[in-house]
Length: 283
Image (cartoon, rainbow, N blue to C red; front, side, top):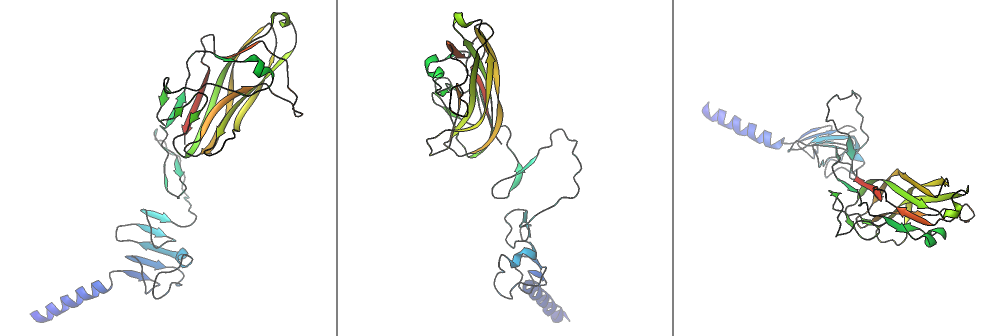
């Protein structure tokens, strides 16, 4: 009787080892638990990517794969997913979810923001160049005057900011403009047209591309104008090594003819105002 029990235990252990992997609709399970919905997997070897589309597996380390037999995360879905219950969360620190280029789902790192707030020193735009329609870039902070808030470790040269990380960025800006006109024109009804552009230069390129901008028409009442101009927000994809800058210029019409009338002086900043505020936020 004792020997019989020993033989029975040995047999049970042997059966357990033979069936360490469980397959449903398949005699060739690829993981600890494997369901082949369409019964279309081969009897030997691994199923093709197309054959895996109807498979569900659970691995020895607890990963669940749907549409794949080799899940790399706790839940790995190869296909479209739906969540039918979408009740609102009342928690004060609830966060949105994002999907990266590899399909991984997670919270975005929202603290990565570099906000450039230059000093109150005035940027003088050469009126002769401006009146001719040249594009005038605004000074950026440099190593001597670092970006005040800079969790992205953005670098700056004389006229642009260097993006250190690849990603999607939200760019926004405001610019303070102070312009003067010749005294003899102070009572005239002429107009001043100024364009304000937010531009990017992608890594490896020499050209600058406008991603956001606005045009302001100033009515010449008196001989001094001052106003803060906001540029619309832009969301762009940037590689590491790309540049961001702000430019001002006298605008042209559709035929390339300069608009408005020439000025005597143009300043960016002044009267206790910052030159501009440029916020660069990685999403």
